[in-house]
Length: 247
Image (tube, rainbow, N blue to C red):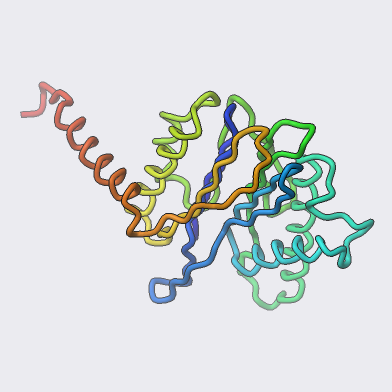
């Protein structure tokens, strides 16, 4: 399992993903779930993935191959699609193709979930930043001002804090802090999510070359947030009134 968050805010885009995969409690490995495709000054496209690792890696590898025009109809690839909608459509089509191929090739392995979900976001010059959730079936939905973020993977533990804090006009700095707290809550409650975390922040219309920031177990800021959040919750809880009927 994994946990990924992406946000489309007025100030820009945020992407964050953990890096843990597991096939049982005795087989845990680390794989990067974030893929970045960019042409500085012209476009930034970021993919976050969750689900069957073989499927998601195949999808990303196919998308990278097609940057070199290998086997793509009419030379379609991520760096020549005219809009982020077309990018999401290409990712969805590649997901659908990969799932169908692997499921047919391993039809005897019934019960295996070949699905994979992607968060696809970025900005292409000439349009606003956009963010999509691409499902295993190849279809997708787009984030908007009323729903400015998506989660995939083990999302339930980190969702409450984001729901309470993040709005479309939230700053990238505040959104990043909230996102890291949501990861800390998830990591504490689920062994299938773990450090390191990859995070990327992109300011609207910057089109600058980006570099994801990796947050490990020894990161002083993450550890300070984790301690402060835990201590703050305990203080807030201690100040809540007791119910009169309970004695």
